[in-house]
View 1 (cartoon, rainbow, N blue to C red):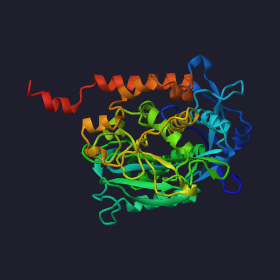
View 2 (view 1 turned 30 degrees about the vertical axis):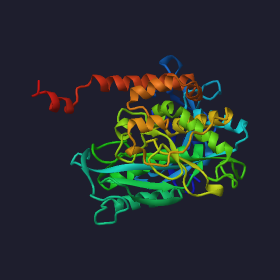
View 3 (view 1 turned 60 degrees about the vertical axis):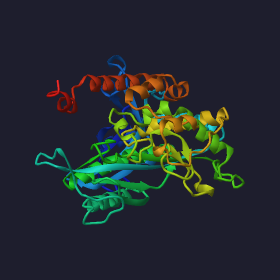
Length: 433
């Protein structure tokens, strides 16, 4: 395929613990070596991987992920393979996020589930760039939810992104302007968990690349602008046994099986802890506040959109739960691993599902919420990290290496934020005191 398509370079891609795509680019002459799992790289230079003295790591490409980028460089075409990371002794590297997800999926398979299907909905903002191609805070349109041109000036860019994704094999289901000015969403067809996480990473790369060609900067930062909606990445989840959707029961009033209810209960139980993974930045918690459609309260409903989890109307093979707190800054492999581990814990321990909350939680006061047993998601990254540390199920899902390095990096991030003096403080206090 590389020869037929005049591919000159191959990017061997993998993801670090913080969700950043890394790659080792090789000329096509080195492809046989890569396919023999002989490509080595220095793991000590990657965030959260290993120390200098144990730095050699190997990239094992997954052949199903072969993809030729539709954009052509002067030197010819570039393709990519997504890789798992291995130790020199041939064992999977414990800190590889893709490997973490595969480990949790193995637990699901041991419990009789063949697949977890995931339909992600990543949102992003498009900002204008200055003469140095650096992002400004000027959004590229004044559009709102489902608006059309001329309000939605991002339409051409978004259309280009969709066409590029389709050339790369994505099945795009919808693309539209989101609620906030400059905000967009492109939904692609669900896939099994590993493929879905691969898709999210590829999606981010394509969005940023095409936006740049339009002189725009695309960001997956959860809340780039105060006072308007932030960007989420709702995840639609379902478990299958072969061709049968384990979440569907036609005899249940809601069409939900006992398995689905236990899974849902597991998500609710562990939501505070996995928030550190699904909402992994200081900025993530600026989005999870009342008034901007993002969930802040741990509840579920089949009827309204204010709780953490809603049950979309489709039934049969499409029966699924929609978890609404994740944001697109999350490392998709770790986020899906944490969600799955939470749900499996619910199934293993037959956790009872609390009552649905079918009224608007945003208009309930604190006493109403307390009486209904509705707790809140963490309000800061620090709070989320502390919850994560106490949750054995999510910690075990990540594994000691990934957990330790992830928490270490996030505590440094929180500390840098906590000790920084922000413009808001100067505006507020400089003249007052």
